[in-house]
Image (cartoon, rainbow, N blue to C red; front, side, top):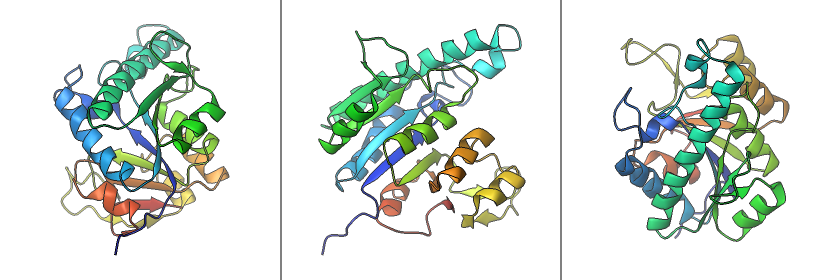
Amino acid sequence: MEQKPMYQRVLLKISGEALAPAPGVAGINYASASYIADQVKGVFDLGIELGIVIGGGNLWRGRDAASSMDRATADYIGMLATVMNALALMDALEDEGIPTRVQTAIEMRDVAEPYIRRRAIRHMEKERVVIFGGGTGNPFFSTDTAAALRAMETEAEVLVKATKVDGVYDSDPKKNPAAVKYPRLTYIEALQQRLNIMDSPALSLCMENNLPILVLNLWDENALRAAMLGDESVGTYIR
């Protein structure tokens, strides 16, 4: 008997560093984009409607650059970096046979559609994956906030924060072997304990609108698909 997914529409947040050639090395590794596309295909094949927000940290980190340049300018450069990543991921997804559209908060019509909420939803209903580039289109907001915003605008049922760790811990599990994983958290607990799941504006936005967050390890080949099929042992849920 074929399993039915738990969700109809999902917003997946991926860090730009997931596309980096190596930790701390700038650039786009197409093998990583292909791996992510394969993971997305596992969800797409379940019939789940999917939106994706990707960061730009593999190409540019606006907050780091803002110490030596105007913060707004640094953030705009970062938004352009997210569009570059979105186009690379689109290419990898289409290599998997997945119809994909890139929409950007900053207009650049020659390479992507402008972000229009109703059009994005219509693409999802027509079984197209929509990648949202350009963040929110405004400086001083992270791609975490963009992900929370797009998830609510497109009426996603859950925001999946894809990381390289299998959930949320009370300390860094790479530095502390005794770190304890949280299977469940409330929004308030996540904010009060400063667990760095997402930045506080994004987390507060999810809390105010009752949008569940799932933090999981995208590099565990079975995690994303299993979570979409209802395996609650995967990752950490914030509700």
